[in-house]
Amino acid sequence: MRSVEVGHRVVGFDTDAKRIERLRAGDSYVDDVTSANLANALATGRYEPTSDGSVCAEFDVALITVPTPLREGTPDLSFVVAAGEMLGAHLRRGNCVESTTYPGTTKELLAPILENRSGLVAGEDFLLATAPSGSTSATRPGGSRTPRRSSQV
Image (cartoon, rainbow, N blue to C red; front, side):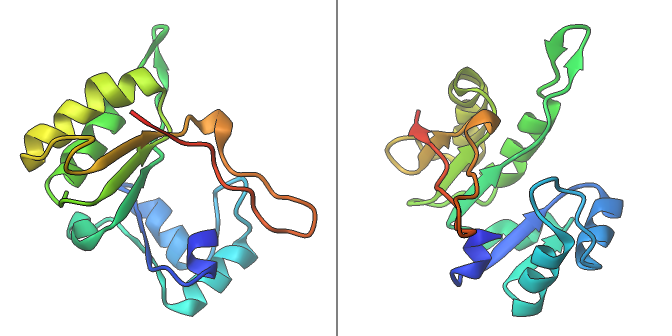
């Protein structure tokens, strides 16, 4: 939401139609985003919740924030794979892709998917960064947000 506040166009992509309906209605299901903040973002016209992957075609920066639920003690990475395949189809030189999954998954799983789908090379043609969900931004006194800690892989 901070990106919308400072003037950037943001696409909120999700494959779950019910979540998209809620977001479009201004009803936030995200713990650190209030419905009021969501409504403000929607009112600017710069935030678009969608399940249409083609809307992501013109991205400059993509944040992959998908779940990795445990299945028999092992993280299910299918959501990371799906996000990488969709974004890889739209990846251009100079783009940045950041993932909240742990660095090993970003480098060993996500990078090859993005490279294979796009024909580009991570670290040369596009930036690939990791910001595990434990290092997300936090609210400072006064309401401003601290930047997330990211590192390029």
